[in-house]
Length: 300
Image (cartoon, rainbow, N blue to C red; front, side, top):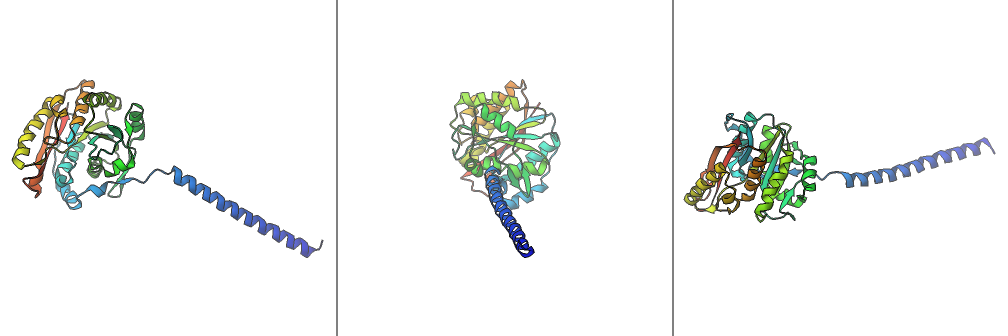
């Protein structure tokens, strides 16, 4: 065989190897891309979609002070109209409990999208360019204990969780959350039992917040009168009254039943300290068709 022939064969071999390598690389890349697409977690939920952006930024000037005692649980509105109340709540909490590393959120399942009366969310959130992660181990533990795993469709629409995220993220730099929705049609017994289940998650760096708006769709005077009763139930841990409450008083009665049972299992009976009380008509809303808000913290 001539030197020219050998040269041609060698060149052909090199080209074949290069082409073969190129084809293999292309296939490998495709397979890797497919695997990545399957294994990659779903994109975070955009919590900013639930904000009133102007009110959110304006609320930054809201003042707050540290409260007496050690906060163990709280209640705050999810109606972003009252952004100043949300800011005031989480700012007071951060000043009073800067050690908090995990926040359990008990929200209504407003649209009954959960296939179970209790649903836990495993989807992270983004807000103002910041990622707020979900405590996946806690979510798995609750699911193993009998709670349903909520779909993305549930949590991407649930403002009871998402509306709180921008405010808590602004006040707590490295907090993780445990999003939970509770349907209004849950039985009293199961709502109470879930409080016992949550006990296993409570440590010195965990805080429980109930996301709740109070009276709905009533005249201003009627709503404010009903709020007097609701605040009394919160102070007295009246699970019977608030567990039976409808939208005339609160949209999240069952979560209070859960919380009160949790506090009982923790062997604490804290004091309720009201932070704010307001109503949508004070923000320019219709006085004949209102939503009211009570925010506060239970301290021991």
